[in-house]
Image (tube, rainbow, N blue to C red; front, top):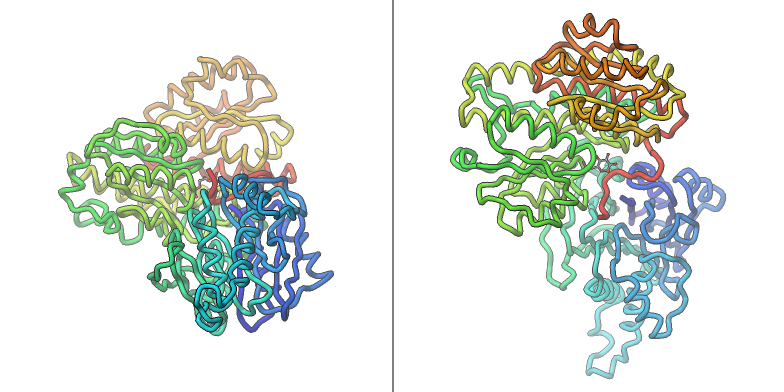
Length: 631
Ligand code: G6P
């Protein structure tokens, strides 16, 4: 949420910053800006609207210079206007700062600055307050009379050191979250960055260095990265960098290799990232399973869990937590772990879980699920669980993300970068991994070798079956066209496919802006049936499984009230639905516990095609952002 890019090197900064922002646009896209220093003058361009608008502004009056900072915004404090777009400046206009996060005590800090005579605020943002505070502290340090405390001018820290110290002093006063980058026009070739709660990565190049919210912004230039920790402050120059803490201690760091390349984040021939990512699912599900299934032992091998067999056997309860799509994967995980391993499992909205006093037993294992690994609510739930002493695992896609680093162990999805705001491939990878976890825990308890083998076979068959399901894209497009004028859709499913009803409704809401609800099929008669009418289609996710005939009854109830029905089914389902469903979509027949990985795909495609039909911006739906680092 909000994207930051900083550059210091020998090339012109403007194209690098703009290119980086385009790659981070999924993090927010309501306004954008850059500040670039040329000689001893900081130039800024910023405006409300998409990065494309900023691009036009920069093309009209290109800012020159070889170091600078930039930002794409998802508004928290202050409307998305030109004034509120980042960068923000200190009172003298010499220091420019970009910020991702929320300064919770900004009003108190602003009041103090005003009391001290600083009234020169030009935006409604919390960020500007931080810029003023750092600027004021820096200027005060520069004004120190060398003789007054016995120090000579030479013994005082240089400008760079004083700016870093001003950043530290300001951040010690801040309550809230931040990923920041700042430049000062008096200090050439120098950027300061810092983080707490919002991600920041240092990209290490040859005679050039980068700062970014996410490596995708800089992977075209370097694959060597340092993932900064909370409370790190980094001073970045062309050919060196220094990491310390907000408290002033020297920091440790580790250089990592980014596991994907620039080619992986290109759209290729696809019109939207979402479609590309839907079509990547045969490979992403395969990669989620790669090297993790053992035919010999009929179980899953998940070394990253960092748990001994005894510890795994001792798990008496599982709590799964996440937000949005990840929460829906968690809900399938509940069915999976209870069915395969017979361990009591619960799902908690991360945002609720972290603030309530859930009774927990000592043998509870907490699994935090998050594509980005940065979602503030999920991270909060994870930290709260750790604070209380529970073992935590992360299921994340982004390598070295905060959730991945702060968990006791976990499983990476290896799905490759997911850029479309609406999550697709990360969902199927999460469900595949939860199946593997269910298998592993089950095999340590009652699950037989033959059952273990059946589950492995079912998982290994998925990539080819997903290929078949993707061939339904044209059919889903035709259905989307047929229903393009409806005002909403209802989604129903039972058991493993109830969370798919929720996920399908979420996809529909996110990218078409149509009203959509998902429910367990049987709940229909408890209220939702009042909504049924000829212009509101109901989508039933009803593979040919143990609850098929129950779903059939619910479909009849909708038909009796003239509600159109779209059915996603398998096996002999199509024959049995022929007379009562308006549209039938048939996927391969698979065991019920892996069926959600297939049933969700036509529904991702339905939302996608309908959004295109309605002229929506599929990859950047209104008001949304990926990687939600605010609470
Ligand atoms: C946002 C996105 C959703 C996503 C959720 C959780 O709300 O719009 O698509 O499912 O965050 O994201 P995470 O990165 O934690 O999986």
